[in-house]
Image (cartoon, rainbow, N blue to C red; front, side):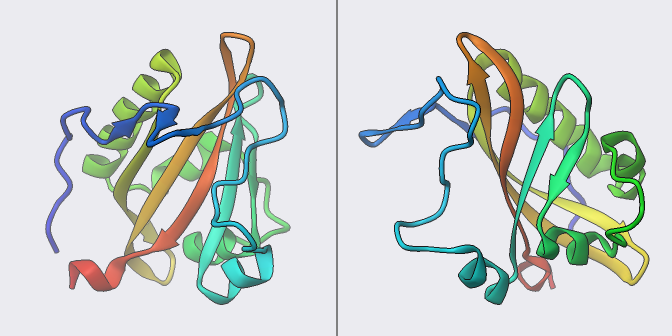
Length: 151
């Protein structure tokens, strides 16, 4: 497998893109999925929703993200408990891009390798900040398995 390298911060995107504006003024996350797409479609295609509250560092995952990480839903779910599953090179790149996204209120896309109990896999993380006024209060988005692209 190709190791992740700390990436240049060119994997983020502005919150205004191609005429689409993400609503930053509400706490409810904007829908990052195509119109008419529902959670059943996401689940059927192996795509999971995630969010991270920045104040508490608490995570909220859909069923497919739990599956991706081989994480039991009854187990405590906190960001610091999940980070050790990331391969160190991927974690470094994800943390840099996450900090950039929060600081500059930008969305991002990155591939990261994790070491789940059932084996290593690559996931694509698509995220966007959730803002109250000018302050980012959470991140949210989609995660899905892209291991086949790295084989």
